[in-house]
Each structure stands twice: as C-alpha cells, then as structure tokens.
Image 1 (cartoon, rainbow, N blue to C red):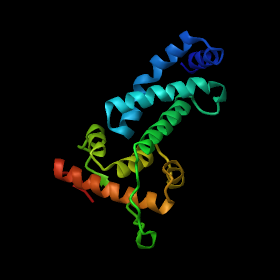
Image 2 (cartoon, rainbow, N blue to C red):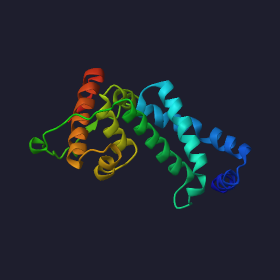
Image 3 (cartoon, helix red, strand yellow):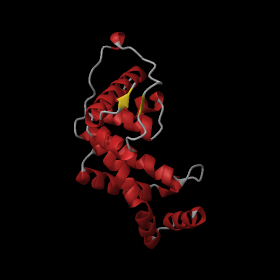
Length: 182
C-alpha cells in the first residue's frame, strides 16, 4: 500500500491529474472526518478539506518521506481548519493567567461501555475553544506546546482549556449516559 501511495505521490509531483484524483479518492473521507471534528459543520468541513487538498497538491514538492503522506496531509487539513476558525473571528477567552491552576487529572476516565462514537459526539457539543484543544490533545496527539503554537495561545491557557474541556465532557457524558466516573 505504501509503495503504491509513494508512486502516486511521485506522479502527482510531475503534475499527473489522474494520480491526484486517486490520492484524493483514497484520502478524502478520512480528511473530511478530520475537518468535521474541528469545524462541526458539514459545509465548512468539505470546503476546508478541498482547500487543504488544493494546498497539498500545490505544495506536493515539499512533501518528504520522513512521515507518511496521510500524516502530512492531515496536518495541512488541520491548519486549514484553524485558518477557517480564525477567519470566522474565533476569539479565545481572555484569561487571567495569574489565577490559572494546572490540575493533575490523570485519573480522568470513563466507563468502557461508553463508545468512542458517543465521546466524539459529546466533544462536538463542547464550546469551540474547548473542542479545539481537546481534539488536538486527545485525538490528534499534540502536546500543549504544539497546541499553543497552532492556536496562538499560551501553554498555560492550553492546559486550562483542556482541563475545562475534560470537565465539561465528563459532565455531559455523566448527564447523558449516567456512567462517568472520577
């Protein structure tokens, strides 16, 4: 599979539109799902995905095989989603950083009977600033330093928003499924 993908990418680097369509067809569903998790709107997600693919194909020469193409493309899609959010006047809550508390919440967990789908649906209900941080941290695997750079917020703000997002998510799941535990 990886060999075929690399062959398609090389063809794309030479302007092969048929190869571009094959790459698009292979990755569009997964990239749409990534965009939808960030934007929580089908039309915006589709637009961001398409813009992301366009940027990827225009900058395909910058792709190196140090990571998989899917990871490289996903990063472009995420950046495109962040741009859409910023363009739509996304404003982070101004926080007094002196009053912020960083809490060790490593015991944070849910009953295993709550499905991944239910958790993702609940995350979609969170306020945008919390949804972004929790998605970047829990689903995409970014650390607080990377999140602070992506969202242009302080590291402390990222940690605080993640803690608040987790708390709201727990409360939401507890209310909805009466199964959250601390």
